[in-house]
Amino acid sequence: MINKQEPKEVELLSCYRDLLCPEALELLEKGVYGIIRRSILRVLPVERLEEDFSKETGRPTKELYSMAGLLFLKEYFNWSLEETRFNYMADLKIQYALNIERDGIRLGERTLERYRYSGGKNWAKR
Image 1 (cartoon, helix red, strand yellow):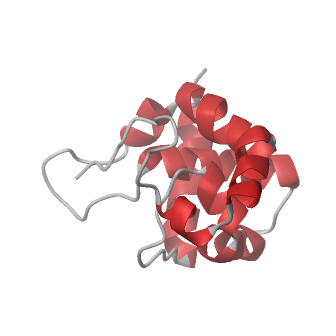
Image 2 (spheres, one colour):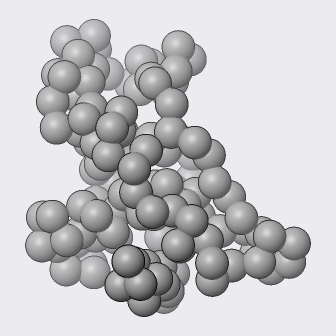
């Protein structure tokens, strides 16, 4: 089953407003992480990731915009798989940039490999 949520502007009830002081949130919004959240996530080829998953059956996917964004960040920062997993699960800046809320964020090694394989295979079709 596909889990895909269109990226939006910062929501009024975002958990980041509760976690961060206004100055820190402003720095995130105006910096590179805000640009990723507002602009880059919207243009990533998420539909190509979607091709490898069923809309009707199977486990729900990770949110596809956040996974496409994570693959982008992995390449941009030249992270290893372990660094990528850690940053997804533990780095508040990355979670903000990928527009994911903090409830039980997990990412297994095999899951990341599957998305990496799917993204690499499907994005190469361009």
